[in-house]
Image (cartoon, rainbow, N blue to C red; front, side):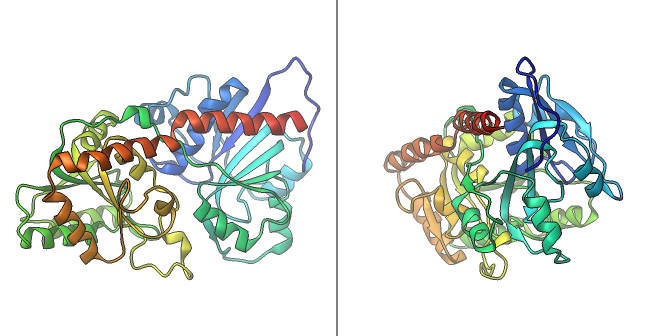
Length: 378
C-alpha cells in the first residue's frame, strides 16, 4: 500500500472517487456518486474522471445531494503510472470503479478501495507484474453482488480481502400508484456486452398479443447516448420492430417521469443475460439489477432471467418470478395478467418489503463504516 505525507489530526480527510470511462446515467455512476454524497460526512470529496462530469446534472437525474463534491478532470497522460508511483498520495482514501483486475488507475490514496461492478474482463494484453502493482496499491476489493464476487474469487485478488457492498437503491422514492395494465422495462438503449435484450421483450409482447392479451401496454424506458450512431440505430430498429403494437418508448425521462412509470406498472420485465454462455461471458449477464429493485419498491411484480445478480434480488414465486426461455416469460405473464388484483396484492407487498434490503440508507451507512475502518488503520 502507498503512503503520502501524514495527515494532521485537525485536518479533515481527503477522499478521491474515480470513474475511468465517460459518464452517463448508469448504475456505476449512481454507485460512485452516492458514495461521494455519503462520504461528505467523513471528509472533503473529489470526483475524478478523464472526461468532464456535470455533477449538477447527475444530482438532478439521480436525486443525490452532491453539494460540496468537487469535479476534477483527471486526464490520462503518457507515463501516468510512473508519475503516480513517485508522487505523494494526495488522498487519505481513494475509491475507484473498474471492470478489470488490472486497474486503470493506481490508487491515489493512503488507503484504497477497488470496486468491481462486473465479473472481471480479461485484459487485452497480459501484464502480470503491472497488474499486481496496480491492484496491490489498494487495500480492499469490493463487489456489487455475490454473483460478481464469485467470478472475482475465481480470477484471484492477489491476496487482497474481498467484500460485497450492494448498490444503493432509492427505495423511498418509489411508491405503488394505481396499477395499470402495463408491463415496464427500464434500461439504457445500447448494443454490445450486457445489453438489455429489448428486441426479445418486444417479440415476447407480440406473442402475448397474438395469444389474446388485450388492453395491455409494454413500456420501454431508458437513456440513450445520442452521440453514438450504433445506439441510435439500435433504437430505430426497435421502433420499427414494435410498429403496430402497443409499445411505448420513453427516452431520457426525468426522475419524476420514471417514478410515475414504476408506480403505475403492474409487471416488470427483465431480460439481460438471456442466451448468454455464462461460463464464456459472465460479464454479459446482469451483475446486480438496480432497476429491478426500483420496480419492486413500487409494487411492480418482477419477471427476471434466472441468471446472475437478479437471483439475489427475486425469490421465485414469493416476491416475483424467474424465467429461462421466452415462452416461460409469456406464459407467466398471461397467468398474472388474468389474475385478480386482490390475489396479486400479497406478491406486491412482499416485493416492496424485499426491495428495502437494498436501500440507499443502508448503502450510505455501510460505505461510511467501511471508510471509517480503513481511515482508522491508516
